[in-house]
Image 1 (cartoon, rainbow, N blue to C red):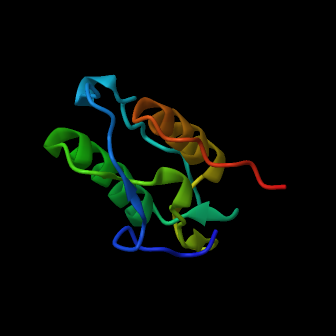
Image 2 (image 1 turned 30 degrees about the horizontal axis):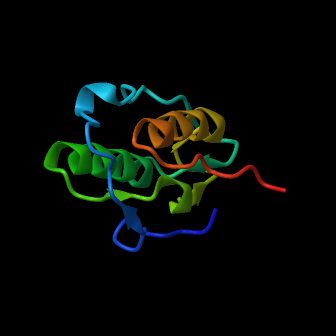
Length: 102
């Protein structure tokens, strides 16, 4: 994935009636140092941004448009569990899941 800060991530309105209790609980993502992973700070920032948007009634970051810096020799989140969680979170806030790569 290319790097896009959450400040640059497009936002979309959260549907009426979606509350914080409707969102899947963020999990403790497995980490990797050898295989490519996602920058943990960027992933956590996106998730926090979605939860904050739901709490405040503001537009949420468009999850499918978010991208993260890759890690290889530094600690990063394993990509597959993060992708699966973000798809669940997308559905919970009425967004389309991230399209599968072709």
